Length: 347
Image (cartoon, rainbow, N blue to C red; front, side):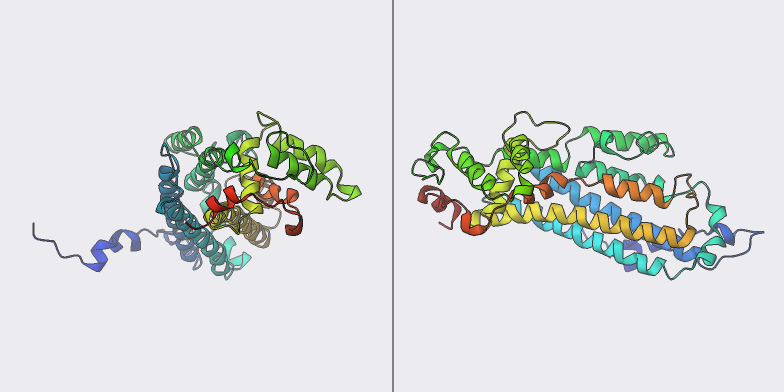
């Protein structure tokens, strides 16, 4: 078939995009507010970026949801690459607030009341993104209201995303499958510092080293260590099992080995996604306080107050970040047996 010529404006659907800004203040009988155009374009741009982030997350979920993830293929590298792209996009979202802040509070008041009840609170794409990453309904701030202003079709999309496999669900399964901690032949020649040869020999030894490294004021961490790493099933409302946490900590401890570098990048990139979402919320809080002070948002939320509470509660991968509490000095790390280091290196 003969290929149809592609024209720039048609390919990008510029007629639709450039005619999609219809300021309320520009309607007949209203007084035009110059900055409303900026307000619309910024938020449309946000929604386009949310769509791209969702596209990347969906691709990652498709790979991680396969019956077996080949860690020795390009699959893991593809996952890390796409998640790092998400991080870069999130940084761009934060930087775009600089543009928004060229609008003064008085500029905003010129059209703010015309927007009710429209609000960023009604961004179903952002709520879907949070759900696909792993934010559970029961962990949301203000969960009784978080879908109250959405259209029925949008609510259905969010609820479907909450019921599907999420990044943190699939991450838990992937970590549980990590072989190094669970195969006895790797540890048959391991010499524990503690002298305890009880299985699992490495884990018992590491707990001994960690507990003896604690300062007096940190002794409560010894019990916390048992709760996180030794209890099955996971206690409380944790999203990662003890088995998955043991694998993740092992990756943090021995990330210098080639086979663990990409797994470390995966965990570190997920932490950076949380970090950038936190940065975005924090900048948004400061902007809202600057624009409307303590007034309620156009959608009826408590404005900056709601955003602050959500920022404190909506950390999705906090259980991974918490594992840094259980690291020990490199000089105290157990020496791995050659049977294992051979598998962890290049072959």
